[in-house]
Amino acid sequence: MIHIAVLMKPYLDSLLEGRKTVECRLTRQARAPYDAIDTGERIYFKQSAGPYRATAIADHVLFECDLTPKRIREIKRDYNDVLCGDDAFWRWKRDSRFCTLIWLKDVEPTDTGPAIRSLQGVAWLTLDEEPAWRRRDQGDHSFHIEVTSGNLRNSTLYVTKVIDRFPKRSHGGNTKREAGSPLTLLLHEGPQVKTDIVAARRILRTRIWGRWFRTHGARPGDHVVFTPVDKTTFFVGLARGSTGAGTVGGGE
Image 1: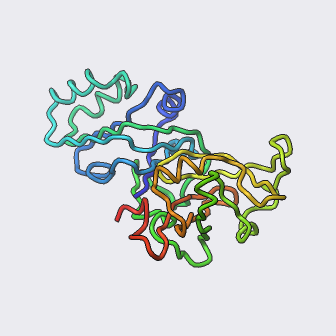
Image 2: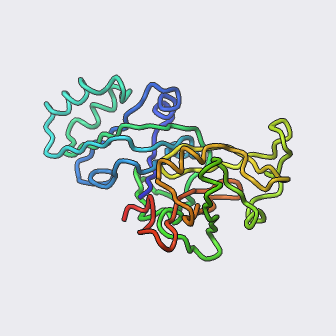
């Protein structure tokens, strides 16, 4: 699952400044994200009536039901230093019955996110799947790169066979001073990476791959799957090779 959370500007500012590290949703009905989000899932934070501004990974989640005004006061007392809720928020939510607390990690600014229709007042949207994390074959929309032993050994990923799927302005020179326009890679279970392509070597410049491969237990023959969000932003997941079992990060 991936999630889109709508926040007012002051809360987004607190999130990006590092003061707000837990997201709280209090509702009268059992609506998302209550019982609808799990550890490791990505959240995109959209400003109310505005653009996407941040993305993060759910590090830990806690659900409570049958709340009372007394219990809500206790939640405020115990967590408000990391929630950053103002008095108006707590007055508004004093009759809530359901609570979702989400501890956040890998908070990053972003101005891109899933393409969606107008939310029409919905404050939280859960999408059933993120295609790059579910399966390797997504037709013309997604594309993949096979992982080799050399990739695992050297923390590299070559784009030789798919270089035309990336914009030409992202192709840079051999040094960082000659870098092309950045691509944004939204890696499953974080982080968000800005990188370009070293054109002469047909390789992504970032060296994040070693750590990311180890996190997901990548093996030769697995596939790194790219699903475009827009022309310069891609979801990135790992699909097991034909001898593997299933897809990493698919929530299956």
